[in-house]
Length: 331
Figure 1: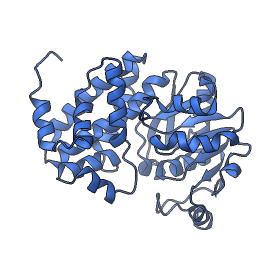
Figure 2: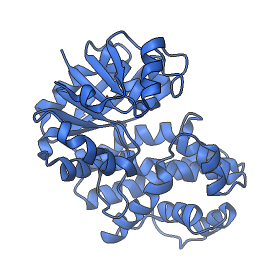
Figure 3: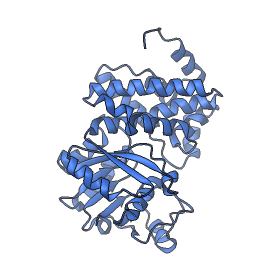
Figure 4: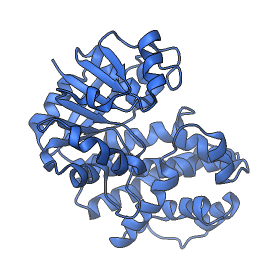
C-alpha cells in the first residue's frame, strides 16, 4: 500500500490525491491554509478548488507539512512551477530520505531554465533516479469526475516508474511509463505556451484551421527543443506531447487557453491576472522556454510571439500579422 503526501491542495493536487486513494493508497493532502485543511476534513470536499467532488476516506487533509510528510514513501509536488524552489527549500528537511519525489508541475524555472525535476534535485540533493514526473492530458476536473484518461509517468529508474504506475492506476485513470524524463517535462511545459497562442486566436474569433495550425506547428517547435536537449522524438507523438497539447489547446477547462482567449478579446495581461484565481503557467514559462531555446539555437516562433504579447506589450492582431508574414520555408 502506498503512503503518499500531496503538496499542495489546488485543483490538480486534490484530484491526484483522490486518484491515489482510489487506487488503494493512504494519502495526506497538505493545504497551505489551515482553514482549507479543516474545511476539507469537515466536509470531504475542497470547495475552493474542486467543488462538488467528494474525496475518499483514505484522503486526510492537514495544514502541517511535517505531519503530511511523516512516513510518506511517495511525495507528490503540485505547486506553481515558479514557486517550487522556495516551497521546496522549506520542505526539504522534512522529506523522508528514500521517498520517491513525483512532480505534477509543468513549467521551466525562470532565470535558471531548469526543468522541475532538475529544481527538485538541486534543492533536495536527491539523486535523479528518485525523481519522476507525471504528464499527459490531465485536465483536473474531468479526472476528478472519473472520466477516462491516460497519463505518462517518466523516471530514469523504470522500476520506480512502474511502482508509481501501480500506485495511481484506477478504473478511470490509466498511467503508462516512459524513461524519457526530458521529453515528458518539456512537452508539459511548452504546451501551456502554445495553448496561450491558441486562446489568443480563439478570442479574436478565428476557428479550427487556425487552432489546428498552431497545434501542429507548436508540436514541431516543442520537438525541436526536446531533441536539442536529448529527448526522444517519439515522446512528442505520445500522451505527454501531442495528447497533452491537444487537450490543453482545445478545452475550456484549460487555464492557459482561457487566459489567452481573454487577451484575444482585448484584455491586457494585467487585467486577466487580476480576474484569474488559478495559475496559467504559460504566462511566465514562455520566457524561460524562450531563454532555453535561444541558449540551444532552436527556433520557436510561436513561443517568441507569446512572449511579445505577454511581456512586451504587443497586440494580439500584430502577433498574428507577424507570424503569418514570416519568411516562407519548407515544412
